[in-house]
Image 1 (cartoon, rainbow, N blue to C red):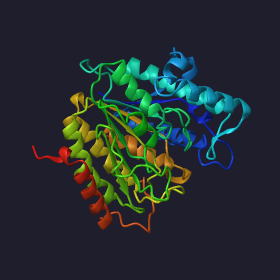
Image 2 (image 1 turned 135 degrees about the vertical axis):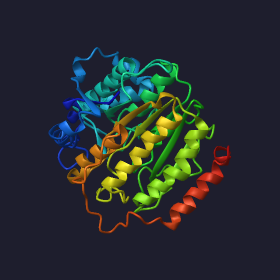
Image 3 (image 1 turned 120 degrees about the vertical axis):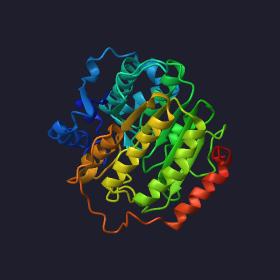
Image 4 (image 1 turned 180 degrees about the horizontal axis):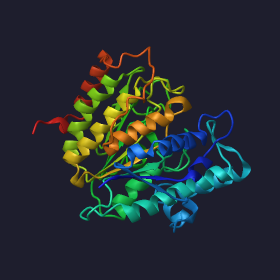
Length: 362
């Protein structure tokens, strides 16, 4: 079996306009690179191009109400008609809201059509979709996020497809605050979010002691300039034991290139090779621990157009078990990718103490 990449050029319509970091050219630049290199990746990745608006989509309100309040949905639509902002960083327009809605409808259709029930055979090893709008909560949005596709997919899996244990692995540079709030009281969903320390950094949420009603939320805040080794050490010391403890039936991973050392909106220190190695480990862990190794991948963040496409492709390559090609080089002169920062060791210790029941030796 191979990995499936579902893309739509309509995703580029989610564009906040000139001067905003979230532009549609992020999507088109990735598609241009991927299509030019597709002969390399064809043995590993099946590219399924769709026109979202032409799919047999479920009703918009039925999908949106799975994760958002009716009042919030109406507020978003009214602000869009007036071309007003949801928050300072998230200006709305009819096109933005239409595209955000269409994306969730398309996700619902794709998951329900191509992703199997827990005990069914799978067509693909895993799926990658554009997305990861993890800042939108039940009745709020912001941080470029209007509707939460990560939460929607988890709700579909648990409420409509008989999955009992879903793990969300959020590897974005910003904490997945909206996703965490939506599943704060849900013992069937565990969220692990590795992100930049939210002290003086958006969204100001995602501290170690924020852990959900059932201790089903695990936050791992890393200090600025966290290197490849920092992230990989967190994976070994925190993520692997918790996944082994929770025994999920499926992993939803989200995050793009904003932890890259050259991203203008963050202060992280991952290199392109670091992204590849990190996501190789995600796939290897799923194969070892998750029944049938099932993963749904949402990729969308990142604001340096010069490294975004290569970084997204490195993430996709790691997940799909495709080779890492040496021409995907980058320059991070201010970062030593092999350095493990003392503060990272401290954070690992804090997480283990806070979630001690998840680290009991078998």
